[in-house]
Image 1 (spheres, rainbow over the protein chains, first blue to last red):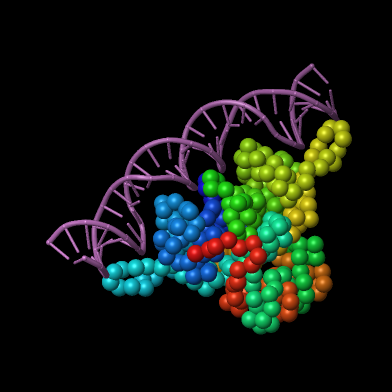
Image 2 (cartoon, rainbow over the protein chains, first blue to last red):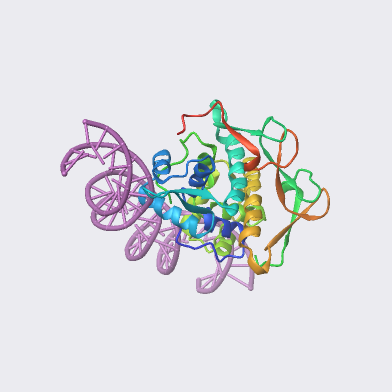
Length: 153
Length: 153
DNA sequence: AGAGGTCGGTCTCTTCAAGGAACCCTCTCG
DNA sequence: CGAGAGGGTTCCTTGAAGAGACCGACCTCT
């Protein structure tokens, strides 16, 4: 993947990408999210090389997005599960799904649907403002420098 | 970057990644979003290789996320701007920012802030259900197969 | 006891993209 | 005229992705 490390940039997007920006990482996360958390399951369901899967899982565990836990003592068997940090990354996946559904799903329609427990309906995610709860997107905001800002051109 | 093409998978996450999953693409988008849309500006502000920048821009234009437009006739000068499809990708960036702020910003605090026009306050994005408008995250939904689903293990 | 299967990886080899840097063409300005 | 900016293209080197073989611990079946 990239050789330029994004982790040191003064940009939350870059730092997020540093954690899950490498190819396959979001798909691994998606699978763990739906309960596919064992090495062989992941490898087969994604068609990823075992070597790369090993690297990604280790990286995600080191970055506290996944945890590796032993679910069987004898024989020793492991599975990967989301941490809290990883669970919050699923927001990102749901927004990806939404965009992919809108712009790339084609005739067949969306491959998965979400049923929201709170209302029982099939819905999708929308972005709202944390302060006023009304819809929020890039056309309705001003972008201002924050405390952690570096000088940006 | 990845050699496995994600575009043909029956998964909206994979198809979204096919468009903007390559390293640098989200950062290019972010810069175009804040008005840094010229080749040299992008190259300098990101520190990306000119070759890779050329490739990414061409890919994003071909995928209708950016458009290349001439803003000066003589001398011919071009800039890149978001299409509607690209503008909607900014939702994704805002969610990335939110996660990065929460989990990677450290002491310094978030590098950018959003002021929401609707309420005038500094806020961040939250995910709400499109049907009932209440908060929605991965712990509060059932994931069901949709019309475009393939058999998933 | 041996054969075969599963799980969770490691190792090796090849190919192809990222990074870096030099080069190029057109146009403008002094 | 030369210098400089804008917007790339070309070339070379390095290193990650992909494919697939291999491995060791453990279980089950006969």
